[in-house]
Length: 380
Ligand code: GDP
Ligand code: MN
Image 1 (cartoon, rainbow, N blue to C red):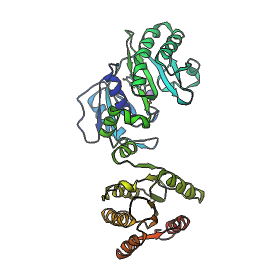
Image 2 (image 1 turned 180 degrees about the vertical axis):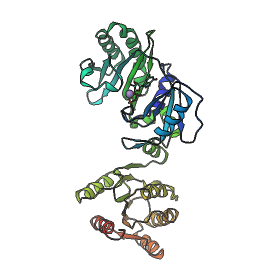
Image 3 (image 1 turned 45 degrees about the horizontal axis):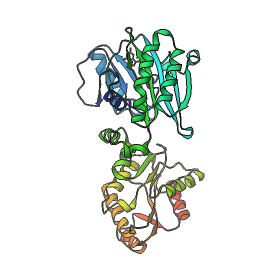
Image 4 (image 1 turned 90 degrees about the horizontal axis):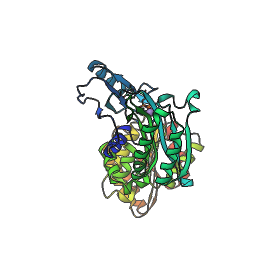
């Protein structure tokens, strides 16, 4: 997963790397009294500058306006929920430096260019992008940086060498998949600063990285999927904002299979969800959360539940589902559930006594057929 720029910069600043001072702001929060600032959308994608999500503000009025405008934007599918307001850097060069892990090969690609910024991919400057692939090892990476620096213009060599040496330990400390500095600002006096950074980390390494977990949990609204997995032990991904079938399912493999079958039948599932029924512990909170997210989908016409109760009991699950439905009246689409496992008869009785708000099936194909049929007819 890619960290938002603000968090990546916090981590790099903690290592003593030269990050321009900045702070994070959400809608409605007081703004710093500041001239000469840059306002940057905090979404985990590149190309924000070209999308209008990076603006320079020379005075307070321009700052207020830039914050308001950028907080209203959606960039590459991500709603901008926060901006970083940062002190403007006075630079003479924008360079480029990155370290990319090639996990399969146990190698790192080191890339350097005297031309950074938003034009790094352009034809004219791409020829200047130098790279080397070396072993995943600090010494090998330092040597590669040395050789690449020698190919750069004379006046950029010292700051790029310094930056390379300082960034390699950070790459290892965070078990990075990617650490990119673009632009890497170089000032007239030869000092350097981190203009923008992409720090991608391995989600599977989070168990060993409590500092990263703290950052993610502190900004749960900016890292919805990762925060959810950490907090509640389940996976949820929105697949298609226009999808018409919401899924509440258990087991990652079973969920993927269900999605494949729906897609094969020409449907577009709204979400992927692996909600672990074994961890409900008598609390409908997770079900409520997922139902709220599904209810927020603009085109939801049918909800398909697929629960395999192994250690759990379907009677208990049926009771929790009814509690959750009561708590989320905005979820109006018809609900079809495929139940399999212990307590099926009790679940049927409980749902029937509640007036059958959920259609129960035990065969997966039948459940899919019914959910699709209901998407096409009942909720038009
Ligand atoms: P990206 O488009 O998402 O990669 O966003 P960046 O953070 O890389 O910003 C895009 C461009 O905005 C940079 O290449 C700079 O030209 C400009 N920019 C960003 N920060 C500053 C700054 O502090 N001073 C100046 N003068 N320009 C900046
Ligand atoms: Mn950038």
